[in-house]
Amino acid sequence: MSSANGAADPVETEVLESTVVDEGTLRRLLRRAGRLLARPAIECLELLLDGDTPYQVRFTMLAALTYLLLPLDLIPDFIPAAGFSDDLVALTALLGLCGRHLTPDIRLRAQRKLDRWFPPSR
Image 1: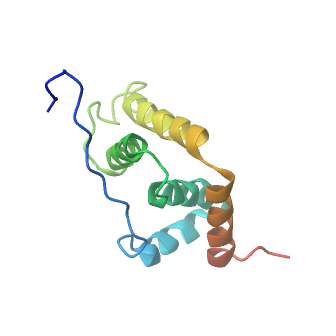
Image 2 (image 1 turned 180 degrees about the vertical axis):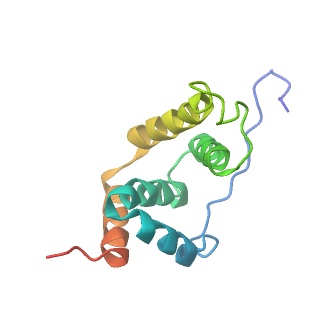
């Protein structure tokens, strides 16, 4: 929708509460992947949960994550060379957003969660 002057009407957004995310399932999945792969995933989660993250960023991140996780593809993965190109576009968008919008506070919260879920080996 747009207003009388042609500008887009603001979209109502809702901040995700951490109780909405099944952290137990995410933790089990990430334990299989290890600390190295868990760090960016937890940073993305914290970015999504952060109330200061613009709604457009959250929406784009959720769309990219959904596309990467769903088995349906615009270009089937079994097609040589081109099969993973659509996945690469979604992953590039996700990494770009994270790189631009991660704050030191979000990184710190993610690091604390990472250390709780994967205690550093000594």
